[in-house]
Length: 167
Image 1: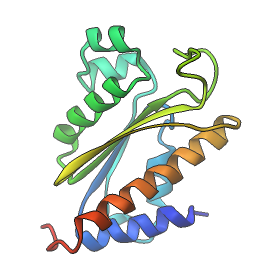
Image 2 (image 1 turned 45 degrees about the vertical axis):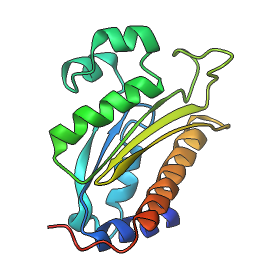
Image 3 (image 1 turned 180 degrees about the horizontal axis):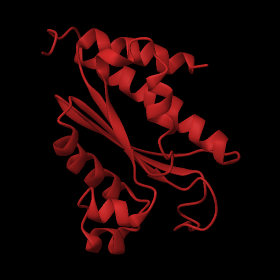
């Protein structure tokens, strides 16, 4: 069963005539899977890639090794780079990149505890860069991330107003 806010978000993306793609580390494809449950998915979903491992970030998505070394794989800087490189890869209107810490064993610190999620979204007119700390078990954190991302997309689309359908 799809998350209600995701279905609402999907409807708005489709209404704008936009295509969306997801680049997911912490959520490991769950966000794309949730959006695929919309009956409108064929109209707006370009696809996604799960980049849980650093190797994928560097070798497929072309995030520079130095950036990952300097900021860690779970950081705002790496998430922004994932979005930028993925926009070129997917050739879509909206790209959502997410990294973060859903369990222990990553780059968690006192300033960046488990539950910290970084989201970077690119739109036809602007971007959103967001950092949030969620609580709960890994699945709770992932589901909260999916819901939060859908809310961010809806707010951005609403702020863009009525836009002519993109073709």
